[in-house]
View 1 (cartoon, rainbow, N blue to C red):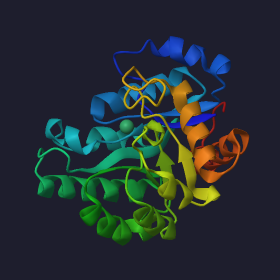
View 2: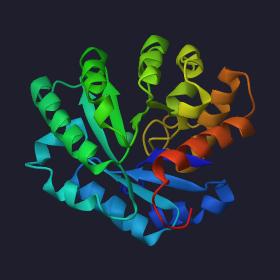
View 3: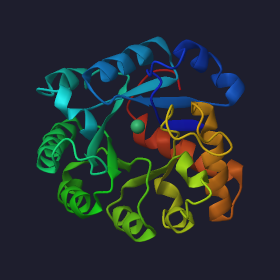
Length: 255
Ligand code: NI
């Protein structure tokens, strides 16, 4: 299995122990994702230490207030273990930072990402009306690929992103009893489907409310298989191949 989006630099982990259990857990590789400059640097350091950990760097919309500029992030982009730019995006669940500020900083980071040619990992929460037109406009410039991470919108919106060739990544939230995500899960073709945990957040059933771990990507894959009327093994293979093609295509290092 590959967990295409986790936060292994979070304080609540003994990261070396979690990574040490990858063989037991059946994890082939993970992408650990930064959300500000410090966590992006930490993600790169962790990826330097462990062959099967890769890093993504960027500033999350809720962390913008701590950032004066993106120079620190930009300097990390040429690192051989950095496989994506993000997570970046818009989050309208909270009123801070101001939406106009979020949009401005999002576009600034899309510009950096497009120059890098790396895939971009998008955080999109309760903002479809603003997010879609921005991404539609930028799609031709984002040649490295785009991931809609922890996808939580409708099947109709999934289909619009699929038309743009974007990857749709599902997290443990698809396992929640009230999720009703089946239509969105089925709107994504095999070649654009990814699975992730977003750990330590959003632990799937039957661990809801606990700390989440990369190994729990198993529950997301299981649910995706159920909704798509196929087997665990098939969805495991599909999501692994997609993650490898998208993130690991040009990068060295042990897989
Ligand atoms: Ni995340």
